[in-house]
Amino acid sequence: MIFGEKLKTERKKRGWSQEELAEKLFVSRQSVSKWENGQNYPSIEIIIKVSDLFGLTIDELLRSDEELTRKVIKDSKQLAYPKLKFTFDVLFLAGVVLLLIKLGVLLLNKAFSLDMTLIGGQFLWNFGPLILMVVAGIGSGILKDIYKQD
Image 1 (tube, one colour):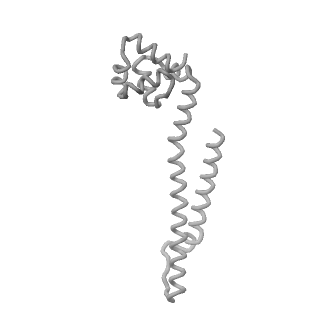
Image 2 (tube, helix red, strand yellow; image 1 turned 180 degrees about the vertical axis):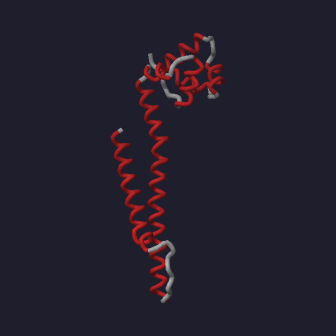
Image 3 (cartoon, one colour; image 1 turned 30 degrees about the horizontal axis):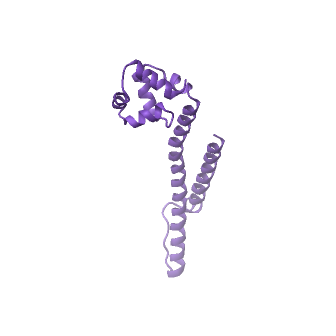
């Protein structure tokens, strides 16, 4: 039995209208209708609420519908990966900023015969940007490969 049929069966067992179920789940009646007709699927949060409401396990709800299972897995990946991708992007930008600061100081020293020094030591300014950008690039590449495989 697919999710929509199971939802409709459980709702009717309790004598609830789509409107009543929608109120209990804090969604619109149209959403319930689309789920029951297989036009759309609920989020994992709603699936958990349905599970609690009808006393069914999440496994019973998900395993009944292969397409819903794929959607939940895909949604969970999309929630997790952007955060990690954002972290790698920030690392890369931090490396770029450090590199631009170093180049700016070098240019100012050359152009105006200044003797500005960068705080933190030569290792930080010579290798810090490179290390940050390489780590971020490798991390992003690995993340992209993992996402492609799935």
